[in-house]
Image (cartoon, rainbow, N blue to C red; front, side):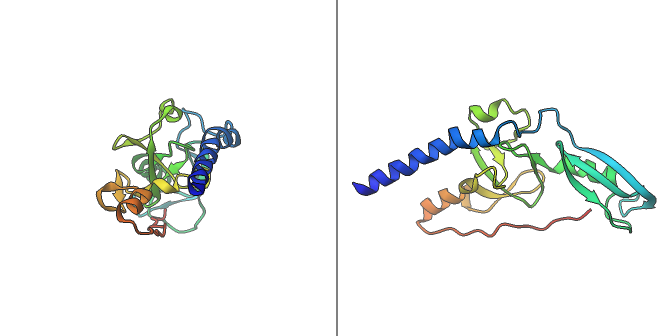
Length: 185
């Protein structure tokens, strides 16, 4: 009976965290619906990049309202600013919880598309659930399913299970090391 009370207490704390504490901490930190990906600065000499275009040596790209990419290297790189921006727009999705960018190779979780997410126009729905990142703010690690590929999810567990679902299905502890190949600019 004691274990039942402990489980109920943990469940109650999880509900309070999910619906009271986490929303209060997050406040209005979400980027606006109309936030865009854009080149915010260009500078330096114009050089030929591996993509075949001429472009500036230095540039900054803002991804959905957050300055994320700053290219400073002196020599040519794989993509010019315009090609890199096009690639970002084609291959990344926004996290349904925080609105941040999820790049190919990053771990993702699938969570229920509840009332908190329905008003977010940017959410990506896969298998009836929304795609979320695993940053500390999003707290969706239990729902980890695999990594974003640029056009879908590469599932880490059989039958597209979540990490916790796989643990329950197999009865074994599940350990995952997050990380992936990153393609440089």
